[in-house]
View (cartoon, rainbow, N blue to C red):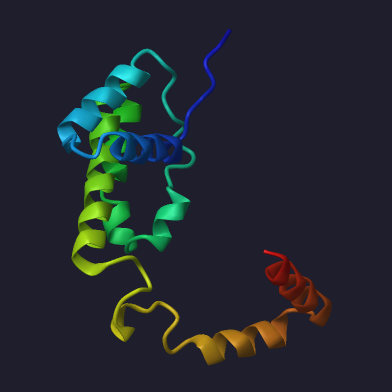
Length: 143
């Protein structure tokens, strides 16, 4: 049976899971565990190297820090390089959260919606059909 392809986001989620399972382990140890786990498996696709849920945890420049290493590792078929990129992104994200707190839970300067609420509402009201607005509102209420 062929191995199912894994994505960069899957690798990142796995690194977070290992971090939760072994909070005392350092980044080097987490990286070694990932390399051991994925060695011999197919590499992620270069088509999608994003980690979407990370945007809510830290600024893009932090969680994307390791993506060039991941890309290079995939191109050279080197799991150590891929994992080095995953660990760099994990470390940057965790360091940011330790120093600043979770995204959106800080001062007004770090609030991504500050100053654009009115413009966003105006743009949505102008360009989004009323029935889609109602649908989106009803979906938000269900969630």
